Image 1: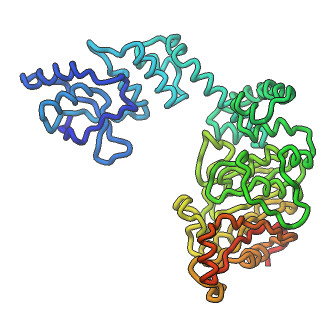
Image 2: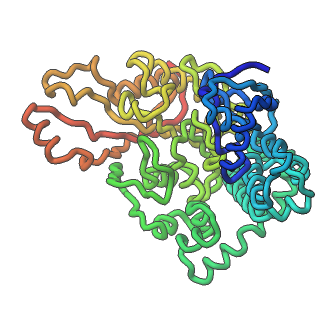
Image 3: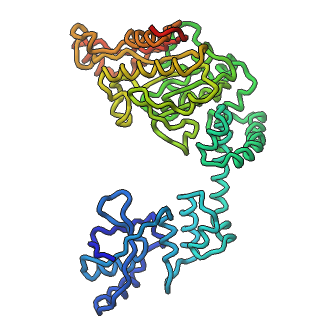
Length: 471
């Protein structure tokens, strides 16, 4: 037991099992304190986010009473819960003359389950003083929702061709449990397919069944050839080597810095891959590539430095080190990708929107060195027939200089990337123009640029490469 300043103790309502503080009870406790009565120490734990602060696990009414008397310190016992849910611990301590009400008990059980869906009804019941059967009733709808979300995740990952061992690891499931789930997957899509066959739109089926729109498109387009897929998605197919898309299709991918049009990914898949091939996206970002792969019947393995297991379980977490050290499990697998779609964060552009570890924040020399190492690694760890689709743009510091004052050393042009690609054994077969929209510049900005003789950048390229020998 130690003395802790009352001002360093915080009531965190997220771990408080009661609906509210009983002010009448606080008043009685305060009178007892003034009369010299001594209470047991309150239970606290170190605050997980605020250094030097504590949050209450048990003793909120006593803590409030001490504050009401003008006290500045209180005796406390600092608890190490060793993984126990703090809300569950707090509920287990709600004993004595004022136990939790039935509504408080039910709400606590539901909140605890939402915090940790791995807890059993018995675990929760023991803490809140209820039977397993009672807890089952409290959380039945929540458990059903969790089960449905898990089913959809497994279905999505399986449809993208992710191996069972990686699905099990990603979702924290025993391999045997996953195998039992997989046998049920064909039935999962029956009702969605039935609605599509009855004339429901993809958007309507998405809303009705809780699927993502790309997943429903993967069902709606089953058995179609790629030309029909373009038609159904209302995307015009570009026949020449200029792919201009002013807008992203918001049905595919998340709102993400540097989001790339789904139509562009679809064109890469159409011209440079076949149904069922394996696509690898090493910097998946907002998930446009796996979403489009679902709609175009390609398998897809994806990595990104930001882990989003709930919303993007198919994007496995991995951080590419500057020196190219470390190899993701994906590239250790026996099967190698047929096509790599590489759309990295551009140099400097939108750097403030990315995480601090993003390559966009590197110095120019370090940025280019990263690409040299990365291209070398991709050449070494993939098969001879693997093709690379590299997406990037010219970068010039045009915002600060008239065009005549710019120098090569102040820029990174597509030539710089081509030199590194050829050096590391990648030989380009196509350079496709995929310009950025000039509509991102307002009329006022354009007028100012023209006055200062500034030449803006809208160039972006899709470079398609086959493997050769490093130079």
